[in-house]
Image 1 (spheres, rainbow, N blue to C red):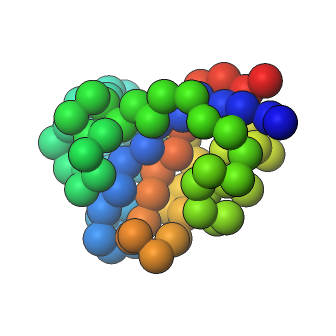
Image 2: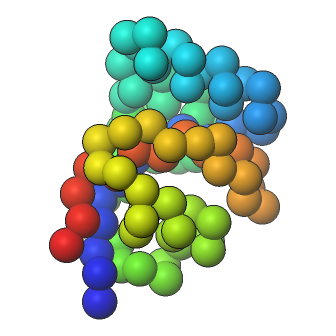
Length: 92
């Protein structure tokens, strides 16, 4: 079964998600932005979700993690939890 490592930032609005994505693209540190803004408990560790298998996350999240380009910020990705920015750091 495919496995991946990723980090993410979870916020309430698409507008905030787009703003944070722009800040990261302009050179802000993903981990620091996650610590400051993410609603997910993983924000405390820079958004790091560790390693997980395909199917462990919600479908919208899984689709990006297991098909998106590595080391690129993806999103906004809407799930029932809110809006995510995702960065896939490895896949096997």
